Structures are given as structure tokens and as C-alpha cells.
Length: 165
Length: 352
Image (cartoon, rainbow over all chains, first blue to last red; front, side, top):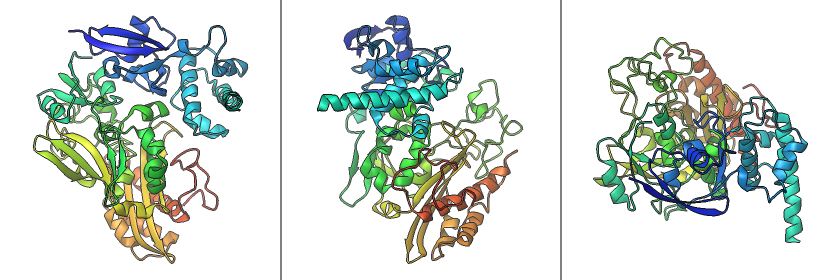
């Protein structure tokens, strides 16, 4: 039996017939929607490589059943740039060498966007590190990642202030 | 992962009926359940998805002043609810010291209570585990057991309950609201989880099909708001389960402790309430000697279950330090590293 599911992914609403309820949100994105930017690291909720935004919040897509997220709005790494213009978090990761091999980077960036949206860290690097502890980087680019998150947060704050003014 | 049927009930009654069938389990966020299913540790025949039920995601203050937290409230939403965190700061601190931000955004309050032990032998299906397979034996007994229980364990099982959230909750007399075929009823959190005894596969008072619909904190629980902390020693600074943790909450009047609450985590198959220790603090002065006496009472009946005698002394020190932090006062803002012994607190010695 197929499970009729509706998901809005990167702004596009799709009707999806799931032939098996075991499909995780991660596998749906990668295997059925060809959105392979979201990475499968541990597949057990430990590494954060699969982080996406669901209804605006960062979660591990490997520990989410797609069928249970019927009606959700999902944003992946493919959905954050505007055409050729990178998202401020992407730009900051490049500027601060917040990566080496790049495998964890989509998850790091989606997690950073979620963290900035949550608004709990201020400009305290310790709070940023704590807030990003669900994203492991085997290359150890943590220093650059923390700097990138702090700078992107400033950029986004300034942008928001301009838009309000 | 074993195939399963997926059921999405619309009403609570439908959910209870579906989950009462043999082989059925509830699915909330699934942050623990899906992990267990991927590893073949849990093999349900059907999942009853309760995440689309309405009315279970509210935090509300009731007429008598108690606070009711719906079972589907997400960990992060509860911890960041300003009013809740102001009234129950140790609960917020415990929540924020657990898991990662991604998991806290998904994981639910009800699921936190029902999460399974992280004993490595429970997770490894090639190992003997009485909890996973009753009668199979317990490989943890002679295995790597430095993190296992020091209270309430049996020859059949030495696993611990991994929750941080439950530790301040049990200290604050939280009550679990349950819906089942017999209707709605309450279970005090302190008696909700079962010690292993001869049936380690039975982990809670819930009968098949019964669902946690809410948690309640009684009005008295908010009286500790100005002196309440959670402290958690872990093998990593962040994103790790407790080796040992403690919640401490005090009511202080004119330099004297009027009432104390102490809970311990990572030490038993349930969140551990240290009532004898609390009794030693009633009427005691706010000083280190009182805290040391309480810590000694808290661990008096502790017994190592393997290479973990260190946890008993560690727990004593954690109790002293948690009480010291609670006496110093709840900070205006949670430290950058919630519940961490590495978080500097002005005016408090780093070593109790």
C-alpha cells in the first residue's frame, strides 16, 4: 500500500507516494528527490551531516520518518542560495575556511542557519560551539566554523536591521 | 529495519486502541525509536504515529497553579519557554544539557521518559541482554560497565536510565498523566520507571497501549526557582550522556534551608530521588558541612555493579557541588555550557 504524502521542499509542494513507511526523510531527499546535498554520515542521529530545516527548525533527517512529516515544509542546502548568490552562511564558511573535505558542510550550514534563527547564542563563541555540538567535523574545521557562524550572524542581523529601517 | 504497518490515528481513543494491539508501539519524534529499529533492537509490527494528534503540545498553567506540559511538547520548546524556564530553571538546564540542538528540536517530553537505556550490550544484538531478550543473560555484568548502575540494579540487569530531564522532574514531584483503556489516571514520576529485578524488560508502569499525554509539576515545584540547578559530568563537554548528574533545589529562609530536593541521574534504571539526603538538610545551615552530610546520606545505599565504584564518590562530589551552586542562586541566564562542571560561576569554587 502506498502512503500519500505531501511535502514542500525548498518552496515546491510535491505529492509523494511512499511505497514503504520505513523511508526516512533523508533517504526520501537523496534517493527519490535527487537532493543529494544532504549527506548521510552515521544515519543514527550522531553526526549531524543530514541536518535540514523542517518547519524552520533544524533536525536530523535520518531520524525522521518521511511519512510522519506529511504536510511539512523542508529546506535543504539546495534551497538556501538565491540563484548564483550564496546565502550569507555559505559565504562566511568560505571566507573562514569552515571546511576541509566538505562532507559535513551541508549539515553544518543548515545547522548554523537554524542556530542563528533560534537566537540563543549572541556573539559568545562558547555558546555557538555548544549550539553546534550536534555537527561533527572529522577534519576538525571547528575554529573556522565558529568564526563563520559568528560572522554570518552579524551579517544577517545587519541585513534584518536594514530591512526594518 | 523490519517492515511495519504505519497507523495515523486522529483521536486519542483511536491511538490507544491501535497501540493496544500486539506488536504495536507509539511513534512520536522517533529520535530514539528509529535508531533502535535501524539496529534491530526494537522490531515493532506497527507504529502508531501520535504526532498528528491535536492538543498534546501545550504548556499551560492550571487553576491550582500547577503546570501541565503536553506529551508532544518538544524539548527545545519547553527549555526556551521563558515563563517555564523562569519557574523551573533546573528543568530547563537539564533539557539543554541533553543531546544536540537538532535532537532537542524534535524529541518530545513523553518520549524522553520512555527512551531506552544506552547500555552498549542492549544496543549490540550479538550480546546477551535480559532487557532485549528475557532469559538471555547479561553481558554487561562482566563487560565494560564503568557507566552502569550503582543503585537498584539486579543480577539480571545493571543498565541506567539515560534521561537528564527526568532528574529535576523527579526531585520536583512531577506527575505523569496517562491515557489507557481504563481511562485517564496519574502516576507519580518517582514510581513510573521500574527497577529491573527479575523482569528488566518491564521498564515502566504503563500497560500495553497506554500513552503518556502530559506531565504536571505541582504548584510547590516553583517555590525552588531562585535556588535550583542541574549539574552533569560527562565524558565529553557537550552532546554526551551523563556519567553522573544531580539536580539540587533549595528553599532558603534567613540562612537556613527550609526544604531541599535532590535527584540523581545516570545511577539507576530510573531517575533517583535522594529523600534521605533531603531530610538531612531540613533546618540545616547553608554551608559545606551540611552539603557533605547530605551527599553521604544520598549515596549511603549505593553499591558498584562492576568497574564503577568511582561513580559513588563522583556522585557524592556532584551532590555537594550541585547544592553549592543551588545555594549560590539560580543565575540570571543559563551558562554557555548548561549543567557543565566546566562552566565558571563567579564566587563559587571550581572544586567542591
